[in-house]
Image 1 (cartoon, rainbow, N blue to C red):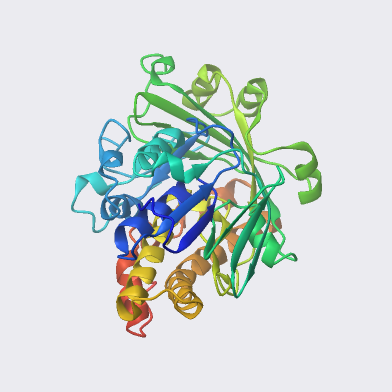
Image 2: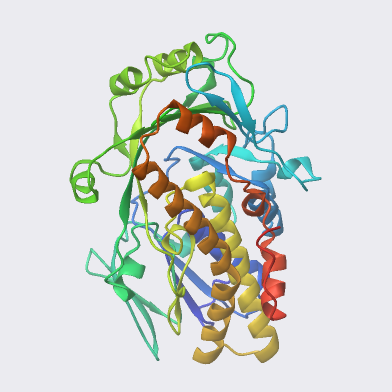
Length: 424
């Protein structure tokens, strides 16, 4: 990543997983001379914060393509002993109802891997020069015209450049600056997440599964898994009937939760879940929001979005991290293709690259959003009695098309004017 200030200046709003991956991809996949990348992060420090995150085979393959080999190690991430990505069990009987499977994942390093989010973030951070990351910069608005792009921060400062990438999450200020009418909707679920040392539960919970397990109940769900670096995670997803406005006023993302509420919520579940809740030391709350698919990710000739800012799917199918990585890979491929052909980066060239990126990625994420919105409608329109639960358990959608998506092949299909086979 060039430190020279003479080349095109790229502003990335957000230095989370999407922002870091975008910086790595642009630096390593393009041959643009003196590319000058700057990331603006609202946090005052880069700490190992957050909860668990899963990367499916597409995300793991993309890490390798981006050269982030340190994140592929068995120490940083956890892969199930059986190789099964996830097992779905009944909330009360503990009976296995279905399992996820891999179809075309010959490299064991690419099977679904679970991390503490902070550990994955730290692995990406090793590949981005610290001097290119500007901390304590909370974006309040973004602007663009034919001359360039600008970010404005709550401390009164601003940054100016040639290209703007909004990697600032589901409540993106970059997106809101260009699409002020865009609205998120609370989807009725709040996640109580916890990560802690695995020694708290190992040897203390009878029949503790070695694999990652998701228990489904009539309305709520519970997830448990080992993570890399000797960590463990529990996640309770509970239904909340309040409106979007009510939840926004009372629950803040990453807010400390009440572990007694977690235990009470699952006290009637099977003994394994109950024991896990009793050993969970704390929780943090994450209300779940979704939004409509955007008509385009090119918000202006020099502006685009990446990660949750681009596709507000609410973390469904634990796909967010992998989607962000595939976004980043495709963005780098698009700029590499345009620059190779023109050897310039005029405003027209930038817009062409961003359009290629958008065209390659949007059909894939739009399909996911259609499924997510369909499930929300089913959940809100049905009583979710036991028979309905059994039907849901037995008729889960096949998401191999999502977990094993080939972003590189999809981009090649876009260049060739073909539609990448989403049903694959």
